[in-house]
Length: 136
Image 1: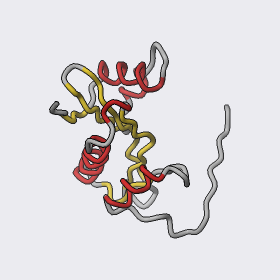
Image 2 (image 1 turned 30 degrees about the vertical axis):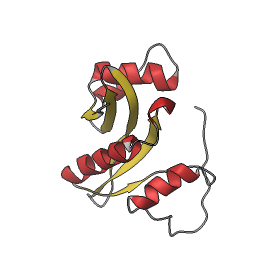
Image 3 (image 1 turned 120 degrees about the vertical axis):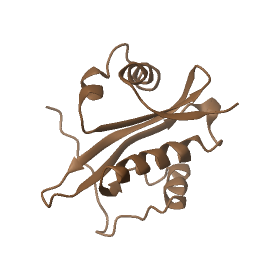
């Protein structure tokens, strides 16, 4: 089956939120923010995968991308969909002036790390890092 990668519209973002985040509503505020970037992989009428994140303005007047989530439905994995989604995300950011992208993934997530490294991603050079979450 052919899969197409498209920049997401608000309705498709809402569908992807329901599918991958397992919530009934959502996506509206995210979809209306000018800094967001979302791509959806379509296999016919079905959502096969998505990636979403942000283009972040920096104080030095440059911009960079943050890829927050990449997810491909289990039935569609190992078909290059994740690669195509990340490539579309990178291209969209570069076309709007971003010069870097960052993301985090689990140290033991070998499939994701293999994908990111095959696309030219390097481990952060600032040494070991940790992530913190704050509930507000």
